[in-house]
Image (cartoon, rainbow, N blue to C red; front, side):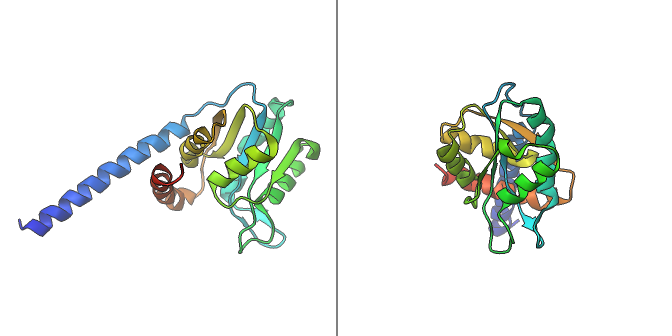
Length: 189
């Protein structure tokens, strides 16, 4: 076997081990347990489509996971966080609020942070605007590890409520999340 083949095999092996390690960290987020007495329930945004805007399946899964938790914790404020991308007809936060209200959550309980474009911004902007206190972050199961890691770096007292991803989004979301975790480990300090 020539040197180049050995180098390529070594690099592939290192890559496989690295991805396995990241997937292990991601799995820890899937098993997260939310605090039983939160001050704030923070739902992280995701893509909205159409005009009028509606949540994509990933965002619907997050909202549907949050609703029973919100109903159970009547004293907690609810913050929906997500800006408006160039290809979105409304902010993710406004679509999330409409969805929650349509599913029986009082509009007066819901605060909106509608400027964020990334998870790190969701957390920073929401904390600056609303003083989150003890927070339960609701996001996709595969995304929760990174969200909690970034919250910890911002000194947000956070636990997580994972929304089980049942859509084909795992095929796109998990590889993207592996890259995003790598980016967060290196740059999001």
